[in-house]
Amino acid sequence: MKPVAPGVAGELFIGGTGVGLGYLNRAELTAERFLSDPFSTETDARLYRSGDLARFRNDGILEYLGRADDQVKIRGYRIELGEIEANLAAEPNVQACAVIAREDEPGNRQLVGYIVPRNGALDMNELKESLGTRLPEYMVPSQFMLLEALPLTQNGKVDRKALPAPLAASRGEGGPHEPRLKRPLPLSGTSCCGRKGSAFRMISLILAGSR
Image 1: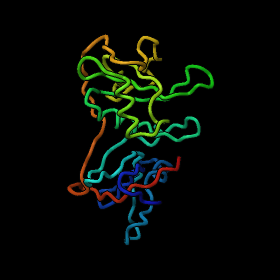
Image 2: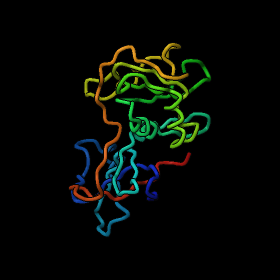
Image 3: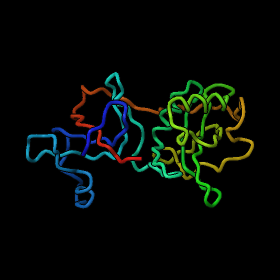
């Protein structure tokens, strides 16, 4: 385990007295998720491997980026979809968003962003330029599609399998685009908490892997 610097994304491990002993009657999952805590002086201390990606901002706030299992590989680069979504959600004209890797044509795997605009038109060129100031080129989606709402599962999570294939008329190419329907859907792109004030001890962000 290797703690990462502020601003760097990593997998979130949680430790402290609030961490349980494991899952009931699920020994294999317990062994995978509940690990010995190398940062504690107590011999029986454990860390819970959350499977979430997060990073400490410079102001000390812990920012949630998405699930570690949402990591994809495109053109040799390992890409964390949650990090792209977090940056998209920070755009003032984006109400809700999701990003997935699609391969609608054999051998042509690319990132597609799905956006519910906040108000009126959305200039895709400006959006891409803004993302390009915070993300490397290979993490900026090749296409964008405007939706009236993101499809959700029964649990209220984004149903990524139900996201439609990009249509030529809806691709993120060119200037301002008007959404066909304007019913807003609230969605938080990031979740934050401080280093203090939790029943759990936030131990560290562990490097999830190199690109």
